[in-house]
Length: 177
Image 1 (cartoon, rainbow, N blue to C red):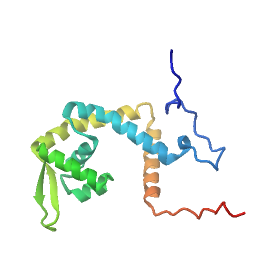
Image 2: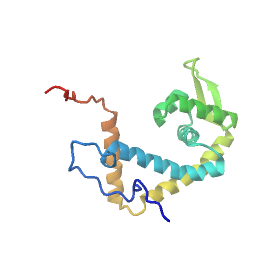
Image 3: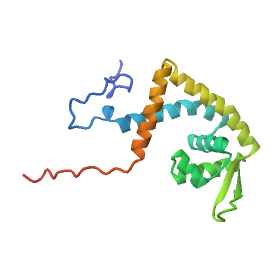
Image 4: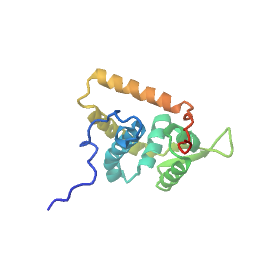
């Protein structure tokens, strides 16, 4: 006997509607949808590299950032990857224990260390980076070049808007009559 699911899967849900503008529907709330999409995409890619190399998504983000930019402080990695500094710190410790990255004192600030990949870290980055490109290509399959350009433009627009300071309008006190 099949049990009915309490909630439809994201692909089974109807397209978002703005008919009921006064109520929040998570399925229509862009921040919720983007966060859900980001998690599904991240998890989908993580399956490949975690099975092969035993690295976590935060560890991959640190490796990928250092693979692209050669060297950075943990603070710079945190800012670039938008990961909390605690997650970056834990990932750095784990990668250092596995000898996938190297720490060096900063020439500018003695309180800071500059991180870079070890040769083994570079080898893993060089193996995972083509997998990342393949995964991205898989995600974009079926989108025309114009749709891909639109998607890129929309992502840049949302990043710009989300990064700008914002404060909500005052909420009226509903208790007053």
